[in-house]
Length: 186
Image 1 (cartoon, rainbow, N blue to C red):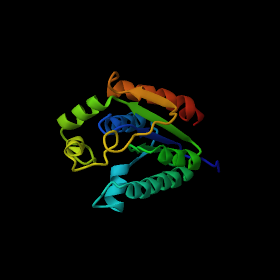
Image 2: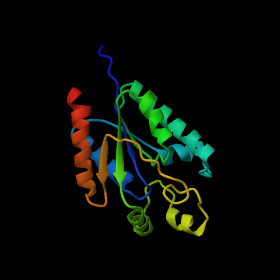
Image 3: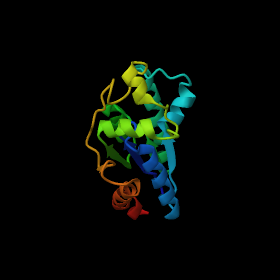
Image 4: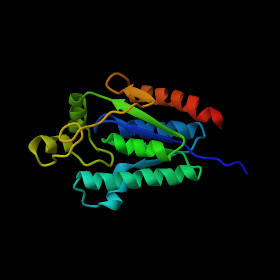
């Protein structure tokens, strides 16, 4: 039997950049191509690991370690993974890159003012906590990436600008990279 390993795609960027929308569209598009992938959302992991989150550095380290380890185990067992997570610290993404052989990072670039506007005007915020930028501005949530804590860019394989491209166009860019790097091997 062939020793198949899954790949892992981490979609990262500021809250409100469009990560979850792009992830959802990408998952749907992959299904039409008969490619399965499990979405691992930091908000889902956090909900189970820290039901009353504080978003401290220590808590983020714990949540992201669990997210990376879960993704590693899935890919080790041949399951493709799409991580939907801000991952504001470079070290979180580096940990995934070290552990997961078939790893690719996609940075969803978007100016902070557009992210804030999107977050304030969108309806259902996927699984993310609502009104995070409003809470950050009022001091209630001092640990919001891009406002109270930094978002540290790394060297992603793919950068997409969601302020200039539609979600569908972003997905097409990602699919092209996935095809070049992973899908053409299948």
